[in-house]
Image (cartoon, rainbow, N blue to C red; front, side, top):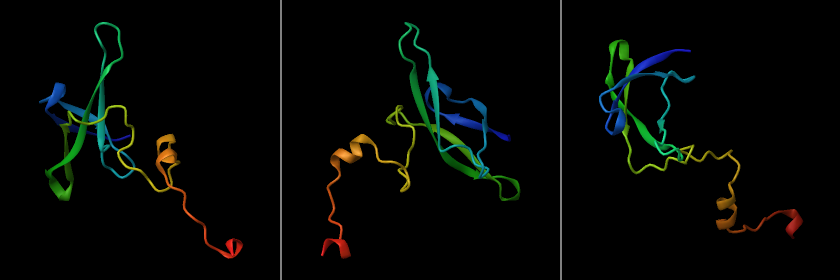
Length: 106
Protein backbone atom coordinates (compact mmCIF):
# COMPACT_ATOMS: atom_id res chain seq x y z
CA UNK A 1 0.00 0.00 0.00
CA UNK A 2 1.08 3.55 -0.62
CA UNK A 3 1.49 6.08 2.15
CA UNK A 4 2.15 9.81 2.25
CA UNK A 5 3.89 11.90 4.90
CA UNK A 6 1.12 14.03 6.43
CA UNK A 7 1.56 16.92 8.89
CA UNK A 8 -0.56 17.14 12.07
CA UNK A 9 -1.66 20.48 13.55
CA UNK A 10 -2.84 20.95 17.14
CA UNK A 11 -3.41 18.44 19.92
CA UNK A 12 -0.82 15.95 21.12
CA UNK A 13 0.64 15.38 17.62
CA UNK A 14 1.19 19.08 16.85
CA UNK A 15 4.14 19.61 14.54
CA UNK A 16 4.66 15.94 13.74
CA UNK A 17 4.69 14.49 10.25
CA UNK A 18 3.55 10.86 10.08
CA UNK A 19 3.18 8.42 7.18
CA UNK A 20 -0.55 7.83 6.59
CA UNK A 21 -1.83 5.01 4.38
CA UNK A 22 -3.82 6.09 1.34
CA UNK A 23 -7.18 4.59 0.48
CA UNK A 24 -8.41 3.26 -2.84
CA UNK A 25 -9.08 6.81 -4.07
CA UNK A 26 -5.50 7.87 -3.34
CA UNK A 27 -6.56 10.08 -0.41
CA UNK A 28 -5.83 9.58 3.29
CA UNK A 29 -8.82 8.89 5.58
CA UNK A 30 -11.12 11.81 6.45
CA UNK A 31 -10.55 11.28 10.16
CA UNK A 32 -7.53 9.97 12.05
CA UNK A 33 -8.03 8.66 15.58
CA UNK A 34 -5.09 8.46 17.97
CA UNK A 35 -5.60 6.27 21.07
CA UNK A 36 -3.40 7.30 24.00
CA UNK A 37 -3.12 4.73 26.83
CA UNK A 38 -4.19 5.84 30.30
CA UNK A 39 -1.34 5.79 32.85
CA UNK A 40 -3.72 4.43 35.53
CA UNK A 41 -4.73 1.48 33.35
CA UNK A 42 -8.16 2.85 32.44
CA UNK A 43 -9.61 3.14 28.95
CA UNK A 44 -7.41 5.01 26.49
CA UNK A 45 -8.12 8.62 25.57
CA UNK A 46 -8.87 9.01 21.86
CA UNK A 47 -7.86 12.19 20.02
CA UNK A 48 -9.57 12.90 16.69
CA UNK A 49 -7.96 14.72 13.76
CA UNK A 50 -9.83 15.85 10.63
CA UNK A 51 -8.31 15.91 7.14
CA UNK A 52 -8.18 19.36 5.50
CA UNK A 53 -6.69 20.57 2.23
CA UNK A 54 -3.18 21.96 2.49
CA UNK A 55 -2.79 23.13 -1.13
CA UNK A 56 -1.54 21.59 -4.32
CA UNK A 57 1.79 19.97 -4.99
CA UNK A 58 3.53 19.15 -8.23
CA UNK A 59 1.46 17.95 -11.18
CA UNK A 60 -1.80 18.99 -9.49
CA UNK A 61 -1.21 16.51 -6.68
CA UNK A 62 -3.51 17.28 -3.72
CA UNK A 63 -1.78 17.93 -0.39
CA UNK A 64 -3.47 17.17 2.92
CA UNK A 65 -2.93 17.82 6.61
CA UNK A 66 -4.76 16.79 9.76
CA UNK A 67 -6.11 19.33 12.24
CA UNK A 68 -7.01 18.44 15.82
CA UNK A 69 -10.76 18.45 16.53
CA UNK A 70 -11.25 18.68 20.33
CA UNK A 71 -15.07 18.60 20.03
CA UNK A 72 -15.29 15.42 17.96
CA UNK A 73 -16.94 12.33 19.42
CA UNK A 74 -14.11 9.75 19.66
CA UNK A 75 -16.56 6.83 19.90
CA UNK A 76 -18.17 7.61 16.55
CA UNK A 77 -16.63 5.47 13.85
CA UNK A 78 -18.23 6.95 10.72
CA UNK A 79 -18.70 10.62 10.00
CA UNK A 80 -21.38 10.09 7.39
CA UNK A 81 -24.58 8.10 7.34
CA UNK A 82 -24.77 6.31 4.04
CA UNK A 83 -28.22 5.56 2.62
CA UNK A 84 -27.39 1.87 2.35
CA UNK A 85 -26.19 1.52 5.96
CA UNK A 86 -28.24 -0.46 8.44
CA UNK A 87 -30.27 1.63 10.90
CA UNK A 88 -28.99 1.73 14.46
CA UNK A 89 -31.15 1.21 17.55
CA UNK A 90 -31.37 4.98 18.11
CA UNK A 91 -32.53 5.49 14.51
CA UNK A 92 -35.37 3.00 14.86
CA UNK A 93 -36.58 4.49 18.15
CA UNK A 94 -36.86 8.03 16.80
CA UNK A 95 -38.19 7.14 13.35
CA UNK A 96 -41.84 7.79 12.68
CA UNK A 97 -43.81 5.12 10.83
CA UNK A 98 -44.73 5.96 7.26
CA UNK A 99 -47.85 4.81 5.49
CA UNK A 100 -47.36 2.56 2.48
CA UNK A 101 -49.42 3.43 -0.55
CA UNK A 102 -50.04 0.97 -3.29
CA UNK A 103 -52.54 -1.52 -4.70
CA UNK A 104 -52.47 -3.64 -1.52
CA UNK A 105 -53.61 -0.68 0.64
CA UNK A 106 -56.76 0.06 -1.37
